[in-house]
Image (cartoon, rainbow, N blue to C red; front, side, top):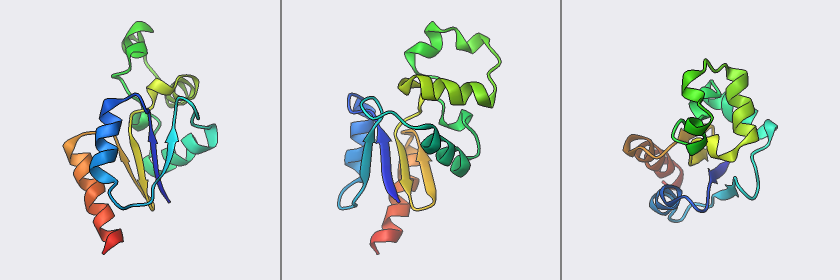
Length: 120
């Protein structure tokens, strides 16, 4: 599977997509207009090991909901991501069985390296 979960209004997502998607045939899911389903989220969690790894603490609602002061469980992370698209750390890039979450240079480099193994 070659898929990218992203937010079209996110400049970082757009930059990452432009950087990694040259000739690859990704399918895209814009998470605001086409929200992630519980099944999709559970599949992502199975690949990465936790809902917390998929959760964005940079979302504006994280601060406004005062979530930093709370002890969040895995069930809380799951519920929050399903309730509010901005809590999904983005972009989420799936390449086969591998998952790359976020926009750090290290993550993008790893995704690009993985894509090289497909195109060669």
